[in-house]
Length: 251
Image 1 (cartoon, one colour):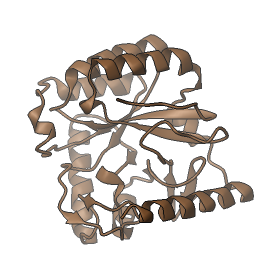
Image 2 (tube, helix red, strand yellow; image 1 turned 120 degrees about the vertical axis):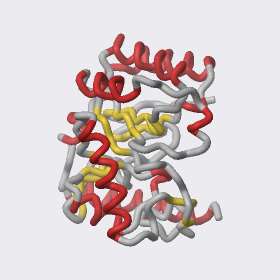
Image 3 (cartoon, helix red, strand yellow; image 1 turned 30 degrees about the vertical axis):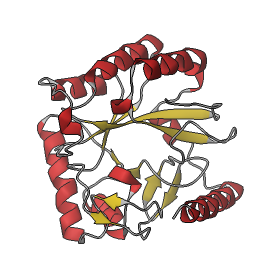
């Protein structure tokens, strides 16, 4: 059952694991809900899905036309990895100390560049503009970020902080929690995994959207909240230290 708490100053909705094979019954209901309230989410699209768990879902034959239609409505289409296949375990040595298996971590710069380039080719062939990226399982290393920059992607929808920030020529849009548990003075991205939802989950979400839709912001709106303020940077570092420490206690 999905759970939500109070909203931050502004919340961006990020839907993960968008692919040809997914929970299209729930996705259709969510699309109608977003259209009703003029909500423009981030859609994390897997360009070449090979994830065996996702492949169990029904396939949408008109998938890429649907993605193009979303972009025309102002929804942000973000690259969510390349094939969504996990292999190497990070041992919590990944950039954000998330741990778990990864599609990108530990691979050479060239291998990671190839994945990003191949993904971009698919989007380009479908005439879909992509300017942002987030890795499956939140796992990155330095080569991931370098590969993204070399391929022309400069926005990563992950990170620690109370709003977008710049680091090493990249803009990071933080996604801190698996639930909508945001600080009341922050701008956050909320991660939604709708492929596991049932009707009860959807109805809960529908009620939440109807009550809070005015505080849900777009990708372009959250990018404008970028701050180099000294106090913001200090708070970001405190949050990073706290969450890394908290996650290290889980293992």
